[in-house]
Length: 302
Image (cartoon, rainbow, N blue to C red; front, side, top):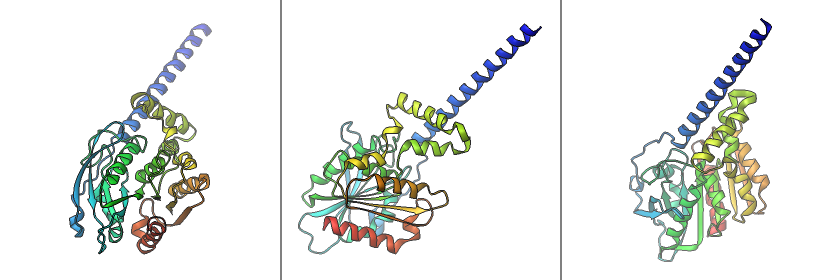
C-alpha cells in the first residue's frame, strides 16, 4: 500500500511539474509574441498639418536593407542656403513619425528635421520590433541619408529620441561617430530589466519568466535582451547627451535614466528628472522641456 501511494505521489508531482513548465512556456511565448508585435497607434498627420514644408523620403536600413519611410523637413530659418545641422527624430514603441511631430516641431525653426518610421512601424517595411537591437540599423540608414543631402551638414547631426527611440539612439552612438548630440527622453536602461518589470506581479519567479521570454527572443529572433542595454552602450560613446525622465510613481523612467547617467564616461552629459507621468514629460513641462532641448542642441550643433 505504501509503495503504491509513493508511486502515485511521484506521478502527481511529475504531472504538476509538467503543467507548470508548459504553462510558463506558453505564458512567456504569449508575452514575447505580443511585445514584438505591438499595437500600432495610427496618426494621419504630416508636417504640412503644422504648416511645415517637407519631402517624402525612401531610404534603407544599414546591413539588412529594409525599406524605410521618412520625412525631411528643411529648416525654416531665413538665410539657410548653407548646409544646416539636422536633427534625426526617433519615435517610441508602437508609435510613428507622425507622433514624433508632437515633441519635435519647435526645432524646425533652427534645424533640419528628419523623422522616420522604425521597422515594423508606420509605413516602413518589417513585421517585428526588436526594441532597439536591429533598430540601430534604421538609425544608421537615416544618418547615411542625411549625410547624402547637400542642404545638411554631415558634421552636425543630432538625435532626439523618445522611449525606444531614445534607447536606440544611445546604442547607435556606440557604433558611429557621426552623432554629435543626443537628447534621450525616457530611455530604458536594459531590455532585461523591462522584461522583469513585465512579470513584477509574479514575485519570486519574475526572473525565470523573464529569462524564458528572452529564450524565445534568442531562439526565434537571435536577439538577446541582455545585449539591448543603453546603460552598457553609454560606456562606449563620446557623444554629448541630455537625459530626461519623469519622476513618476514607480520610478521606472527616472531610475533607468539615472543608471545610464552614472554609467556614462563622457564628461558632457546632463540629467533632468522632474515630477511627471511616464512618457508624458513634454506634455506636462512643455516650456522647460523646449528650453532645455534647444539650449543643449544649440551648444553642441550651432
